[in-house]
Length: 328
Image (cartoon, rainbow, N blue to C red; front, side, top):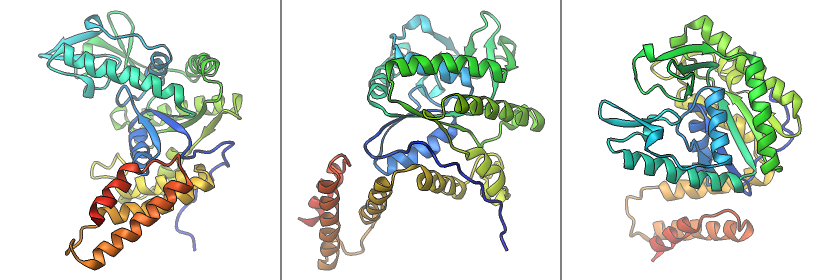
C-alpha cells in the first residue's frame, strides 16, 4: 500500500550540468537548493540582492543585473542608525552608508558578470503580495521594519506578472539568447497573510508561471517544489519547529527530486563520485598519523585526481591540494 501521493514531475526540455553557470534569484527556497548546488561544486550565484519574495522585486533585480548602475547614497535611507536599500535584503544593510554601498555595488557588478556567463537561471516566487511606498508607489523588496503606515499592501494579478515578466524575458534573451530558465513557487507559506490569502497568492503565482511556461516551452521549465511539499510531504514531521518552513529532511527530499530529474546523467555520475570524496574530506580520524588513515586519504586523492582529469570543468583543485597535504 502506498502511503503518500507522489507528484509527477514533467520531463524537462533541458537540464543542468557542471558545465553550466547558474544564477539563482528569489525566496528562501532558492537559498535551500542553491546551497545544495554550491556544496556539490556547481558554479552558482545565489541571490545577489539577498532573499526576494515578490515577482516585481525579482524582476527589478534581474533588470539591474542586465544593466548594472552603481548605487549611491541617494539610493539608501537611514532608519535607527542603520542604512538600508529598498532593493535589497537587510544583509546588505550597515551602520555605515559607505559599507552598505560597498557590499551592494561589489555584489551587483560581480553578479552581473556571472549572469553574462550563466546558461541557467533559477527563479523562485514566494508571494504575490507587494508593498508599495505610500510616498511614490515604489514596490520595495524589503520593508526593513519601517512603520506599516508607510506602505500600501496589494496582491498583483496574474496578468500583471505575466506582462512584466514577458517584457523582461524578451530583454534577457536579447542579451543572452542561450539562457534557459527554471521557475518554481516557494513551498514556504506566508502565514501572516492568512490561510486563505496565502492560497490565493500561491495560486496567482502558479497561474502566472504556467502562462509563461506555455508561452516559452523550450526556454522555460517548471519545477513543482510547492506541490511536492503540499502533497508528498504534507505531514507536519516534514516541517521545522515553526510549522511553516520545510525541515532539513524535506529540503533534502526536494533536492533529491530536483537533482534526479533536472541534472544531466553525466552530472549525476560526477555528483555521486564527488559525494564520496566530500565524505572522506569530512571524516575526522581518531588516529590521523596511522598508516590506515594515510592509505584511506591516498585512495581518496587518487579518485579526486581521476575525476578531475576525466571532467576538467569540474573544479576541485583546492580539495586535491588539501588531500595531498594530508598524505605528506
